[in-house]
Image (cartoon, rainbow, N blue to C red; front, side):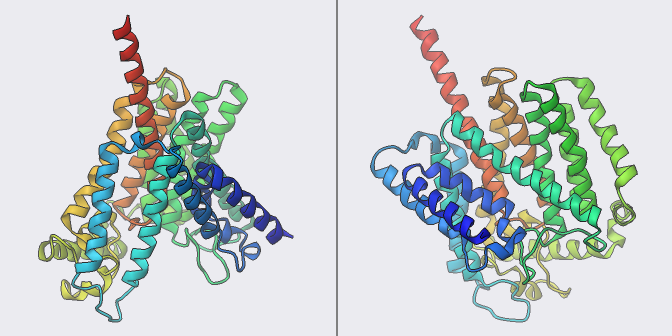
Length: 431
């Protein structure tokens, strides 16, 4: 019965996406970020949900493009420019990367498969940039991260109540052990990016019980991070909570946020996380941190040896033995992984791609009416992106779609702010 309902919903979405591709874009990112195929895997056996969403959405986008219903103005900015440069050099790193075709025991990923995945991610990302082009679409699109983190918070806390995990909590997986959040650190990152949305959406809603209901979710999100026992997630939670507090409309509530987090950590942090947290200060003596440093050193040597093309996309593992005598592993740092695999142009393009997204949000927030939806969403998106990049210092998140989803939000907000400013200038000039 569940499979029949899913197929019906996918069929309905496919038909509707041919007319309105922004709907397919929204549902596609919900599938990519929430991962229902891993939560309720028994209902998705034999079904490729993202493919069944992406195909009609892409067709609908092409139809809308030929009919002149796509807004091309929304992509004329530096964010999109650096995203394109980044993708070009990722592709070139596959073509010219010297270690792409080397096969050894440390070939963690197939380079061609990684490239195809990145191509799919970028195509859907660019469709999203075009399709989410007004405030009403933005409101619905912004619910993707809220709904995803809300459900995962419920899921994580239910695992705690039912004691359905051991030591550290990871995200839901199917029978094959596959899942978007099968790594505890990646699972923690999802919650980190969700905290600012609950906080600022709470300021936006008018009813006090909705506001405090949304804010009440935050301690449960913190608890979900504690359950993963991720040190990066812990630091990321502190980072976004601190920034949210500093940019809080009412300073007294912002001041309360950090002591509330510390109280929650002291009460519900758990012995495993607290034990791991003690090693943050003496990171060089801790095995996990030490192996990360070894990987970063090897990655830096790769960049020096191959500054233009890198060693090749998906080739960090098989290239590792040529640059270090330590045991090969992934970089556990998104920036080093990009620089090492795709070269310095790709690396700096990625940094600028993200930097312009965050700076644009902070810069143009005041273009919106104070206390409006876009006003608060600007802060939420900027801090969430900052939290993602903070976690990226400790994790390899190159193909993780939360970042592209957040950039679509940033791009649309930037476009709406510029549009509003230009309209106000026209009015003032006409007067």
